[in-house]
Image (tube, rainbow, N blue to C red; front, top):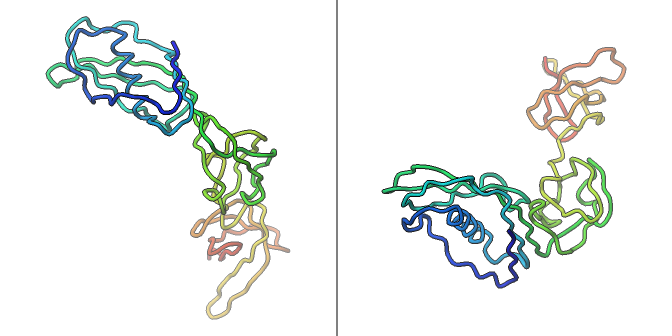
Amino acid sequence: MSARFLLPLLVAPFASAAAAAPTTTDAVVEAARSSVETSLGQRYGQIDLAVTGRPAAVPKTDVALRAMPVVGRFPRERFTVDVELLRDGRVVGKATVGFSLHASTEGWVYSADAHDHDLATAVTMQRQTVDVAHGECVTPEQVEGLRLKHNVRAGQAVSLADFERVPDIDNRQPIRLRAAFGDITVERAGMAMRAGNRGDVVTVQVDGATAPVKATVTDRGEAELVQ
């Protein structure tokens, strides 16, 4: 079953608990659908919402229905909605409805393939109609200062989940290592053996040394020997 809506999206407000009435599977599905449509609102140019799973059976008694919020990231391509069955304000049962969703809006996509650890400033993007169900859409400004944490393809929607913070010290990065011995401070060059941020303890291979040492990250590209 599929419904297609074009802006403006005309959605009647969905009450948190509908008036008591003999329960049917169709009523449960409609309660779940109304809740989803209300959550989506009028932010998207086109919505394709389809039911993928209906409850096998529901009690044939007079109950009110209350659709619960979608758990996890929303909107997304596939999800379920739990509908509580209420009698005198008490939950006496639950039914689950499955949906698939496509919701389009103007967003940003990668205009060329890019690779993990590429800085956001080096990743090319362009505006295009995107399906937000495939991931949270973000702007180039929102990922400024971050880097990719995996490869991405041209035409793929830009998502915040594609990016991560650039660590203060990266794996295999040359760093400055300081060691304090009383009033004397010695500085040596080395290479970090794993990534870390301020306060993290990382392993460092000091230039010319045979064994690595432990050091605390103190700043970008800098660490202090753990005594």
